[in-house]
Image 1 (cartoon, rainbow, N blue to C red):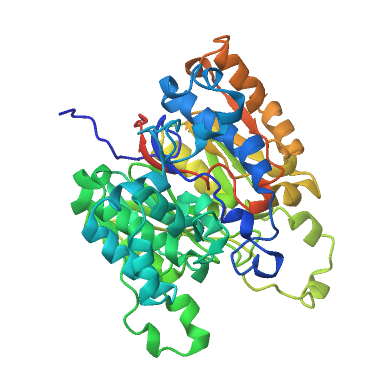
Image 2 (tube, helix red, strand yellow; image 1 turned 180 degrees about the vertical axis):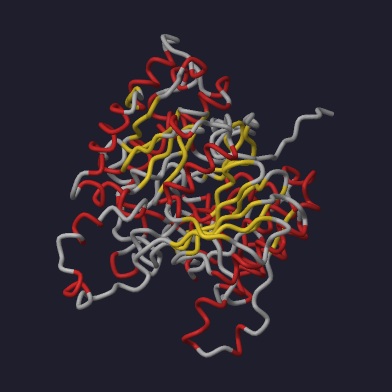
Length: 486
Protein backbone atom coordinates (compact mmCIF):
# COMPACT_ATOMS: atom_id res chain seq x y z
CA UNK A 1 0.00 0.00 0.00
CA UNK A 2 1.29 3.48 -0.90
CA UNK A 3 2.63 5.61 1.92
CA UNK A 4 1.30 8.71 0.23
CA UNK A 5 -1.91 10.04 1.77
CA UNK A 6 -5.03 9.87 -0.38
CA UNK A 7 -6.65 12.79 1.45
CA UNK A 8 -4.61 15.68 2.82
CA UNK A 9 -4.69 19.45 2.34
CA UNK A 10 -2.31 21.82 4.09
CA UNK A 11 -2.47 24.90 1.87
CA UNK A 12 -4.57 26.79 -0.66
CA UNK A 13 -1.92 26.64 -3.38
CA UNK A 14 -0.11 23.29 -3.26
CA UNK A 15 -0.48 21.33 -6.50
CA UNK A 16 -4.01 19.98 -6.67
CA UNK A 17 -4.27 16.19 -7.03
CA UNK A 18 -7.84 15.30 -6.05
CA UNK A 19 -11.13 17.14 -5.55
CA UNK A 20 -14.89 16.73 -5.54
CA UNK A 21 -17.02 18.63 -8.03
CA UNK A 22 -20.64 18.55 -9.11
CA UNK A 23 -21.68 19.36 -12.65
CA UNK A 24 -24.77 21.55 -13.12
CA UNK A 25 -27.73 19.15 -12.99
CA UNK A 26 -31.30 19.39 -14.27
CA UNK A 27 -32.45 20.88 -10.97
CA UNK A 28 -30.60 24.08 -11.86
CA UNK A 29 -32.73 24.37 -14.96
CA UNK A 30 -35.89 24.23 -12.88
CA UNK A 31 -35.18 27.21 -10.62
CA UNK A 32 -38.07 29.61 -11.14
CA UNK A 33 -37.90 33.38 -10.52
CA UNK A 34 -40.37 33.30 -7.63
CA UNK A 35 -38.19 30.78 -5.74
CA UNK A 36 -34.72 31.86 -6.87
CA UNK A 37 -33.84 33.76 -3.70
CA UNK A 38 -35.23 31.01 -1.46
CA UNK A 39 -32.80 28.69 -3.24
CA UNK A 40 -30.01 31.29 -2.83
CA UNK A 41 -29.89 32.38 -6.47
CA UNK A 42 -30.12 35.98 -7.62
CA UNK A 43 -31.39 35.00 -11.04
CA UNK A 44 -32.30 32.02 -13.17
CA UNK A 45 -29.63 30.58 -15.44
CA UNK A 46 -29.63 28.99 -18.88
CA UNK A 47 -28.60 25.42 -18.10
CA UNK A 48 -27.35 24.31 -21.52
CA UNK A 49 -25.13 27.37 -21.87
CA UNK A 50 -23.78 26.89 -18.36
CA UNK A 51 -22.98 23.27 -19.07
CA UNK A 52 -21.75 23.18 -22.66
CA UNK A 53 -20.10 26.55 -23.07
CA UNK A 54 -18.76 27.08 -19.54
CA UNK A 55 -18.63 24.27 -16.97
CA UNK A 56 -17.51 21.61 -19.45
CA UNK A 57 -14.36 23.67 -20.00
CA UNK A 58 -13.81 23.73 -16.24
CA UNK A 59 -14.03 19.92 -16.19
CA UNK A 60 -11.54 19.58 -19.07
CA UNK A 61 -9.08 21.94 -17.38
CA UNK A 62 -9.25 19.95 -14.16
CA UNK A 63 -8.73 16.70 -16.02
CA UNK A 64 -5.73 17.99 -17.95
CA UNK A 65 -4.05 19.06 -14.73
CA UNK A 66 -5.12 16.13 -12.52
CA UNK A 67 -5.90 13.12 -14.72
CA UNK A 68 -4.75 13.78 -18.29
CA UNK A 69 -5.18 10.25 -19.63
CA UNK A 70 -8.93 10.60 -19.09
CA UNK A 71 -9.20 13.54 -21.48
CA UNK A 72 -6.23 13.86 -23.87
CA UNK A 73 -7.62 12.97 -27.30
CA UNK A 74 -10.68 11.27 -25.85
CA UNK A 75 -13.32 13.70 -27.09
CA UNK A 76 -12.09 13.46 -30.68
CA UNK A 77 -12.98 9.76 -30.64
CA UNK A 78 -16.62 10.43 -29.87
CA UNK A 79 -19.33 11.22 -32.37
CA UNK A 80 -20.47 14.84 -32.13
CA UNK A 81 -23.95 13.70 -31.06
CA UNK A 82 -22.66 11.87 -27.98
CA UNK A 83 -19.78 14.12 -26.93
CA UNK A 84 -21.85 15.49 -24.05
CA UNK A 85 -22.10 11.95 -22.61
CA UNK A 86 -18.44 12.33 -21.61
CA UNK A 87 -19.67 14.71 -18.90
CA UNK A 88 -22.76 12.75 -17.74
CA UNK A 89 -22.32 10.76 -14.51
CA UNK A 90 -23.52 7.19 -14.94
CA UNK A 91 -23.19 7.14 -18.73
CA UNK A 92 -20.90 4.52 -20.31
CA UNK A 93 -18.86 7.31 -21.95
CA UNK A 94 -18.45 9.30 -18.70
CA UNK A 95 -14.84 10.20 -17.90
CA UNK A 96 -15.10 8.58 -14.44
CA UNK A 97 -11.94 9.90 -12.83
CA UNK A 98 -10.83 9.08 -9.29
CA UNK A 99 -9.06 12.44 -9.14
CA UNK A 100 -11.74 14.76 -10.52
CA UNK A 101 -14.54 13.12 -8.56
CA UNK A 102 -18.21 13.75 -9.26
CA UNK A 103 -20.41 14.04 -6.15
CA UNK A 104 -23.22 12.17 -7.90
CA UNK A 105 -20.94 9.19 -8.56
CA UNK A 106 -19.96 8.97 -4.90
CA UNK A 107 -23.62 9.04 -3.97
CA UNK A 108 -24.57 6.31 -6.42
CA UNK A 109 -21.74 4.12 -5.06
CA UNK A 110 -22.98 4.21 -1.46
CA UNK A 111 -26.57 3.61 -2.61
CA UNK A 112 -25.49 0.13 -3.74
CA UNK A 113 -25.53 -0.80 -0.05
CA UNK A 114 -29.11 -1.70 0.89
CA UNK A 115 -28.77 -0.55 4.50
CA UNK A 116 -27.34 2.82 3.50
CA UNK A 117 -29.94 3.19 0.74
CA UNK A 118 -32.84 2.53 3.12
CA UNK A 119 -31.57 4.86 5.83
CA UNK A 120 -30.72 7.69 3.45
CA UNK A 121 -34.00 7.55 1.54
CA UNK A 122 -35.92 7.56 4.84
CA UNK A 123 -33.87 10.54 6.07
CA UNK A 124 -34.41 12.53 2.88
CA UNK A 125 -38.15 11.80 2.83
CA UNK A 126 -38.38 12.95 6.44
CA UNK A 127 -36.50 16.17 5.72
CA UNK A 128 -38.65 16.83 2.65
CA UNK A 129 -41.91 15.77 4.40
CA UNK A 130 -42.78 13.01 1.95
CA UNK A 131 -45.14 10.06 2.29
CA UNK A 132 -44.09 6.52 3.11
CA UNK A 133 -45.17 5.52 -0.40
CA UNK A 134 -42.50 7.82 -1.80
CA UNK A 135 -39.83 5.88 0.07
CA UNK A 136 -40.95 2.63 -1.53
CA UNK A 137 -41.01 4.27 -4.95
CA UNK A 138 -37.45 5.50 -4.53
CA UNK A 139 -36.11 2.25 -3.11
CA UNK A 140 -37.15 0.48 -6.31
CA UNK A 141 -34.81 2.60 -8.45
CA UNK A 142 -31.34 1.67 -9.61
CA UNK A 143 -28.57 3.38 -7.67
CA UNK A 144 -27.60 5.72 -10.52
CA UNK A 145 -31.24 6.76 -11.01
CA UNK A 146 -31.80 7.21 -7.29
CA UNK A 147 -28.69 9.38 -6.94
CA UNK A 148 -29.97 11.63 -9.71
CA UNK A 149 -33.42 11.95 -8.08
CA UNK A 150 -31.99 12.76 -4.65
CA UNK A 151 -29.86 15.52 -6.17
CA UNK A 152 -32.01 17.01 -8.93
CA UNK A 153 -35.42 16.28 -7.41
CA UNK A 154 -36.60 15.02 -10.82
CA UNK A 155 -38.17 11.59 -11.12
CA UNK A 156 -38.25 9.39 -14.22
CA UNK A 157 -38.03 11.51 -17.39
CA UNK A 158 -37.72 14.72 -15.40
CA UNK A 159 -41.35 15.72 -15.83
CA UNK A 160 -42.24 14.76 -12.26
CA UNK A 161 -40.60 16.70 -9.42
CA UNK A 162 -40.48 14.82 -6.11
CA UNK A 163 -38.21 17.25 -4.29
CA UNK A 164 -37.13 20.84 -4.72
CA UNK A 165 -33.81 21.21 -6.56
CA UNK A 166 -30.58 21.78 -4.64
CA UNK A 167 -28.85 24.05 -7.18
CA UNK A 168 -26.13 25.12 -4.74
CA UNK A 169 -24.55 21.66 -4.86
CA UNK A 170 -22.62 23.12 -7.79
CA UNK A 171 -20.59 24.82 -5.03
CA UNK A 172 -19.15 21.74 -3.35
CA UNK A 173 -16.62 23.78 -1.35
CA UNK A 174 -19.20 24.64 1.28
CA UNK A 175 -19.89 21.04 2.35
CA UNK A 176 -16.55 20.22 3.93
CA UNK A 177 -12.87 20.98 4.16
CA UNK A 178 -9.71 18.98 4.66
CA UNK A 179 -7.62 20.51 7.44
CA UNK A 180 -4.32 18.68 7.07
CA UNK A 181 -5.32 15.01 7.52
CA UNK A 182 -8.70 15.70 9.17
CA UNK A 183 -12.02 16.26 7.42
CA UNK A 184 -14.43 18.81 8.83
CA UNK A 185 -18.08 18.35 7.89
CA UNK A 186 -19.65 21.76 7.57
CA UNK A 187 -23.16 22.89 8.48
CA UNK A 188 -24.80 25.12 5.85
CA UNK A 189 -26.72 28.06 7.25
CA UNK A 190 -29.63 28.09 4.83
CA UNK A 191 -32.53 25.63 4.73
CA UNK A 192 -32.09 25.28 0.96
CA UNK A 193 -28.80 23.43 1.53
CA UNK A 194 -30.00 20.94 4.15
CA UNK A 195 -30.38 18.01 1.75
CA UNK A 196 -26.98 18.38 0.14
CA UNK A 197 -25.28 18.46 3.57
CA UNK A 198 -27.11 15.28 4.55
CA UNK A 199 -26.09 13.55 1.32
CA UNK A 200 -22.45 14.48 1.89
CA UNK A 201 -22.56 13.30 5.48
CA UNK A 202 -23.73 9.85 4.30
CA UNK A 203 -21.04 9.77 1.61
CA UNK A 204 -18.24 10.58 4.03
CA UNK A 205 -19.26 7.97 6.56
CA UNK A 206 -20.00 5.22 4.04
CA UNK A 207 -17.78 5.60 0.96
CA UNK A 208 -14.49 3.74 0.67
CA UNK A 209 -12.77 6.96 -0.44
CA UNK A 210 -12.91 8.19 3.16
CA UNK A 211 -12.20 4.87 4.89
CA UNK A 212 -8.64 5.79 5.93
CA UNK A 213 -9.71 8.96 7.73
CA UNK A 214 -12.96 7.80 9.25
CA UNK A 215 -11.54 8.38 12.74
CA UNK A 216 -10.46 11.86 11.68
CA UNK A 217 -13.85 13.22 10.65
CA UNK A 218 -14.98 16.23 12.67
CA UNK A 219 -18.63 17.13 13.18
CA UNK A 220 -19.61 20.10 15.33
CA UNK A 221 -22.68 19.68 17.56
CA UNK A 222 -25.63 22.04 17.51
CA UNK A 223 -26.09 24.39 20.45
CA UNK A 224 -28.09 22.23 22.86
CA UNK A 225 -29.98 25.32 24.05
CA UNK A 226 -30.73 26.59 20.57
CA UNK A 227 -34.41 25.68 20.63
CA UNK A 228 -34.90 27.59 23.92
CA UNK A 229 -33.43 30.86 22.67
CA UNK A 230 -35.52 33.86 21.63
CA UNK A 231 -35.94 34.17 17.86
CA UNK A 232 -33.75 37.28 17.68
CA UNK A 233 -30.82 35.37 19.25
CA UNK A 234 -31.05 32.11 17.34
CA UNK A 235 -29.21 33.13 14.20
CA UNK A 236 -25.87 33.88 15.87
CA UNK A 237 -26.10 31.12 18.49
CA UNK A 238 -26.48 28.32 15.96
CA UNK A 239 -23.71 26.04 14.74
CA UNK A 240 -23.49 27.03 11.09
CA UNK A 241 -20.33 27.17 9.02
CA UNK A 242 -19.59 26.79 5.31
CA UNK A 243 -16.43 25.91 3.42
CA UNK A 244 -16.16 29.29 1.74
CA UNK A 245 -15.39 30.68 5.20
CA UNK A 246 -12.55 28.25 5.88
CA UNK A 247 -9.03 28.41 4.43
CA UNK A 248 -6.07 26.28 5.45
CA UNK A 249 -3.40 28.76 4.34
CA UNK A 250 -0.48 26.87 5.90
CA UNK A 251 -0.12 23.56 7.77
CA UNK A 252 -0.25 25.41 11.08
CA UNK A 253 -2.76 28.15 10.23
CA UNK A 254 -6.51 28.13 9.55
CA UNK A 255 -8.60 31.17 8.65
CA UNK A 256 -12.26 31.20 9.72
CA UNK A 257 -14.71 33.76 8.40
CA UNK A 258 -17.55 34.97 10.60
CA UNK A 259 -20.13 35.99 8.06
CA UNK A 260 -23.66 35.77 6.76
CA UNK A 261 -23.20 31.99 6.68
CA UNK A 262 -20.78 31.17 9.53
CA UNK A 263 -21.55 32.05 13.14
CA UNK A 264 -19.19 33.07 15.92
CA UNK A 265 -20.67 30.21 17.95
CA UNK A 266 -19.51 27.66 15.34
CA UNK A 267 -16.11 29.36 15.11
CA UNK A 268 -15.62 29.05 18.87
CA UNK A 269 -16.47 25.36 18.80
CA UNK A 270 -14.09 24.76 15.92
CA UNK A 271 -11.20 26.57 17.60
CA UNK A 272 -11.64 24.42 20.69
CA UNK A 273 -11.72 21.16 18.71
CA UNK A 274 -8.75 21.98 16.48
CA UNK A 275 -6.55 23.06 19.36
CA UNK A 276 -7.52 20.05 21.49
CA UNK A 277 -6.64 17.69 18.63
CA UNK A 278 -3.49 19.74 17.83
CA UNK A 279 -4.42 19.90 14.15
CA UNK A 280 -3.26 23.53 13.80
CA UNK A 281 -1.66 25.91 16.28
CA UNK A 282 -2.85 29.23 14.86
CA UNK A 283 -6.38 30.30 13.93
CA UNK A 284 -7.45 33.72 12.72
CA UNK A 285 -11.08 34.82 12.80
CA UNK A 286 -12.19 37.29 10.14
CA UNK A 287 -15.48 39.01 10.81
CA UNK A 288 -16.71 40.33 7.46
CA UNK A 289 -19.85 42.34 6.65
CA UNK A 290 -23.07 40.40 7.05
CA UNK A 291 -24.03 40.99 3.43
CA UNK A 292 -24.97 38.97 0.39
CA UNK A 293 -22.19 40.46 -1.74
CA UNK A 294 -19.57 39.28 0.77
CA UNK A 295 -21.21 35.97 1.79
CA UNK A 296 -17.90 34.13 2.54
CA UNK A 297 -14.27 35.16 2.99
CA UNK A 298 -13.41 33.49 -0.33
CA UNK A 299 -15.58 36.06 -2.09
CA UNK A 300 -13.32 38.75 -0.60
CA UNK A 301 -9.89 37.19 -1.22
CA UNK A 302 -8.09 34.03 -2.34
CA UNK A 303 -4.44 33.05 -2.62
CA UNK A 304 -2.54 32.90 -5.91
CA UNK A 305 1.04 32.24 -4.77
CA UNK A 306 2.84 32.19 -1.43
CA UNK A 307 3.39 35.90 -1.79
CA UNK A 308 0.48 36.91 -4.07
CA UNK A 309 -3.17 37.41 -3.16
CA UNK A 310 -6.21 38.70 -5.03
CA UNK A 311 -8.60 40.71 -2.88
CA UNK A 312 -11.36 43.28 -2.71
CA UNK A 313 -9.75 46.60 -1.86
CA UNK A 314 -12.76 47.99 0.02
CA UNK A 315 -12.31 45.42 2.78
CA UNK A 316 -8.52 45.19 2.64
CA UNK A 317 -7.58 48.41 4.42
CA UNK A 318 -9.31 51.56 5.53
CA UNK A 319 -8.82 52.83 2.00
CA UNK A 320 -11.55 55.43 2.29
CA UNK A 321 -9.57 57.48 4.80
CA UNK A 322 -8.67 60.01 2.14
CA UNK A 323 -12.37 60.81 1.71
CA UNK A 324 -12.97 61.02 5.47
CA UNK A 325 -10.13 63.50 5.80
CA UNK A 326 -12.02 65.93 3.56
CA UNK A 327 -14.80 66.16 6.15
CA UNK A 328 -14.51 68.44 9.17
CA UNK A 329 -13.91 66.32 12.33
CA UNK A 330 -16.81 68.00 14.12
CA UNK A 331 -19.19 67.37 11.22
CA UNK A 332 -17.99 63.77 10.96
CA UNK A 333 -19.72 63.02 14.26
CA UNK A 334 -23.03 63.54 12.48
CA UNK A 335 -22.25 60.94 9.82
CA UNK A 336 -24.31 57.75 10.12
CA UNK A 337 -22.40 54.70 11.27
CA UNK A 338 -23.07 51.52 9.35
CA UNK A 339 -22.91 48.71 11.88
CA UNK A 340 -20.97 45.69 10.69
CA UNK A 341 -19.64 47.30 7.51
CA UNK A 342 -15.99 46.70 8.39
CA UNK A 343 -13.59 43.80 8.89
CA UNK A 344 -12.33 42.65 12.27
CA UNK A 345 -9.46 40.19 12.59
CA UNK A 346 -8.58 38.33 15.80
CA UNK A 347 -5.88 35.69 16.02
CA UNK A 348 -5.66 32.81 18.50
CA UNK A 349 -2.58 30.69 19.16
CA UNK A 350 -2.49 27.33 20.85
CA UNK A 351 -1.48 27.64 24.48
CA UNK A 352 -2.43 31.32 24.47
CA UNK A 353 -6.13 30.96 23.75
CA UNK A 354 -7.08 33.46 26.45
CA UNK A 355 -4.76 36.10 24.98
CA UNK A 356 -5.85 36.61 21.36
CA UNK A 357 -4.51 39.62 19.53
CA UNK A 358 -6.17 41.84 16.97
CA UNK A 359 -4.70 42.40 13.51
CA UNK A 360 -5.28 45.81 12.03
CA UNK A 361 -6.38 44.90 8.52
CA UNK A 362 -6.63 42.14 5.94
CA UNK A 363 -3.46 43.11 4.10
CA UNK A 364 -1.47 42.83 7.32
CA UNK A 365 -2.90 39.36 7.97
CA UNK A 366 -2.13 38.09 4.46
CA UNK A 367 1.38 39.56 4.65
CA UNK A 368 1.88 37.68 7.91
CA UNK A 369 0.76 34.43 6.30
CA UNK A 370 3.15 34.91 3.38
CA UNK A 371 6.10 35.86 5.59
CA UNK A 372 5.67 34.09 8.93
CA UNK A 373 3.94 30.92 7.73
CA UNK A 374 5.30 30.52 4.19
CA UNK A 375 8.77 32.04 4.43
CA UNK A 376 8.47 34.97 2.01
CA UNK A 377 10.13 38.34 2.42
CA UNK A 378 7.82 41.23 3.23
CA UNK A 379 9.06 43.14 0.18
CA UNK A 380 7.97 40.36 -2.16
CA UNK A 381 4.31 40.26 -1.06
CA UNK A 382 1.92 41.49 -3.75
CA UNK A 383 -1.78 42.28 -3.75
CA UNK A 384 -3.88 42.17 -6.90
CA UNK A 385 -7.11 44.09 -6.41
CA UNK A 386 -10.56 43.40 -7.78
CA UNK A 387 -11.27 45.75 -10.66
CA UNK A 388 -7.65 46.98 -10.46
CA UNK A 389 -8.79 49.10 -7.51
CA UNK A 390 -10.80 51.38 -9.80
CA UNK A 391 -14.26 52.71 -8.99
CA UNK A 392 -16.81 51.27 -9.72
CA UNK A 393 -15.13 48.18 -11.18
CA UNK A 394 -13.82 46.86 -7.88
CA UNK A 395 -17.31 46.27 -6.52
CA UNK A 396 -18.78 45.19 -9.86
CA UNK A 397 -16.13 42.55 -10.46
CA UNK A 398 -16.06 41.33 -6.86
CA UNK A 399 -19.79 40.64 -7.32
CA UNK A 400 -18.89 38.42 -10.30
CA UNK A 401 -16.21 36.53 -8.36
CA UNK A 402 -13.01 38.28 -9.36
CA UNK A 403 -11.57 37.34 -5.94
CA UNK A 404 -12.79 33.72 -5.99
CA UNK A 405 -10.02 31.76 -7.73
CA UNK A 406 -8.96 28.11 -7.57
CA UNK A 407 -5.22 27.39 -7.61
CA UNK A 408 -4.41 24.31 -9.70
CA UNK A 409 -0.85 24.72 -8.51
CA UNK A 410 1.08 27.64 -7.10
CA UNK A 411 0.69 30.61 -9.44
CA UNK A 412 -1.75 28.93 -11.85
CA UNK A 413 -5.34 29.88 -11.09
CA UNK A 414 -8.77 29.74 -12.73
CA UNK A 415 -10.91 32.89 -12.89
CA UNK A 416 -13.83 34.26 -14.88
CA UNK A 417 -13.38 35.93 -18.26
CA UNK A 418 -15.83 38.77 -17.59
CA UNK A 419 -13.72 40.58 -14.97
CA UNK A 420 -11.73 42.72 -17.39
CA UNK A 421 -10.16 45.19 -14.97
CA UNK A 422 -9.02 42.41 -12.64
CA UNK A 423 -7.47 40.67 -15.65
CA UNK A 424 -5.52 43.86 -16.37
CA UNK A 425 -4.36 43.93 -12.74
CA UNK A 426 -3.01 40.37 -13.13
CA UNK A 427 -1.13 41.43 -16.25
CA UNK A 428 0.36 44.42 -14.43
CA UNK A 429 1.53 42.00 -11.72
CA UNK A 430 3.44 39.97 -14.32
CA UNK A 431 0.96 37.15 -14.91
CA UNK A 432 0.19 35.54 -18.23
CA UNK A 433 -3.50 35.50 -19.10
CA UNK A 434 -5.05 32.88 -21.37
CA UNK A 435 -8.58 31.87 -22.28
CA UNK A 436 -9.53 28.36 -21.21
CA UNK A 437 -10.76 27.58 -24.73
CA UNK A 438 -7.41 28.53 -26.27
CA UNK A 439 -5.37 26.74 -23.62
CA UNK A 440 -7.32 23.51 -24.04
CA UNK A 441 -6.67 23.57 -27.79
CA UNK A 442 -2.96 23.95 -27.05
CA UNK A 443 -3.09 21.05 -24.59
CA UNK A 444 -4.94 18.88 -27.10
CA UNK A 445 -2.42 19.58 -29.85
CA UNK A 446 0.43 19.13 -27.32
CA UNK A 447 1.67 22.60 -28.18
CA UNK A 448 1.72 23.25 -24.42
CA UNK A 449 1.72 21.03 -21.35
CA UNK A 450 0.09 21.79 -17.97
CA UNK A 451 3.44 21.26 -16.20
CA UNK A 452 5.04 24.15 -18.10
CA UNK A 453 2.57 26.81 -16.97
CA UNK A 454 3.79 29.36 -14.43
CA UNK A 455 2.19 32.58 -13.17
CA UNK A 456 -0.93 32.16 -15.26
CA UNK A 457 -4.55 33.27 -14.93
CA UNK A 458 -6.83 30.94 -16.92
CA UNK A 459 -10.10 32.59 -17.97
CA UNK A 460 -13.21 30.45 -17.87
CA UNK A 461 -16.30 31.46 -19.92
CA UNK A 462 -18.70 32.78 -17.31
CA UNK A 463 -21.86 34.52 -18.49
CA UNK A 464 -24.10 31.97 -16.73
CA UNK A 465 -21.76 30.61 -14.05
CA UNK A 466 -21.16 34.07 -12.63
CA UNK A 467 -24.91 34.60 -12.24
CA UNK A 468 -24.97 31.71 -9.78
CA UNK A 469 -22.79 33.79 -7.41
CA UNK A 470 -19.77 31.54 -7.08
CA UNK A 471 -16.39 31.16 -8.75
CA UNK A 472 -13.93 28.32 -9.33
CA UNK A 473 -12.92 28.29 -5.66
CA UNK A 474 -16.55 27.69 -4.67
CA UNK A 475 -16.94 24.96 -7.31
CA UNK A 476 -14.22 22.77 -5.79
CA UNK A 477 -13.78 20.65 -2.69
CA UNK A 478 -10.04 19.79 -2.59
CA UNK A 479 -9.21 16.44 -1.00
CA UNK A 480 -5.52 16.22 -1.81
CA UNK A 481 -2.86 18.84 -2.46
CA UNK A 482 0.91 18.54 -2.50
CA UNK A 483 2.61 20.04 0.52
CA UNK A 484 4.44 23.31 0.05
CA UNK A 485 7.73 23.89 1.79
CA UNK A 486 8.37 26.99 3.86
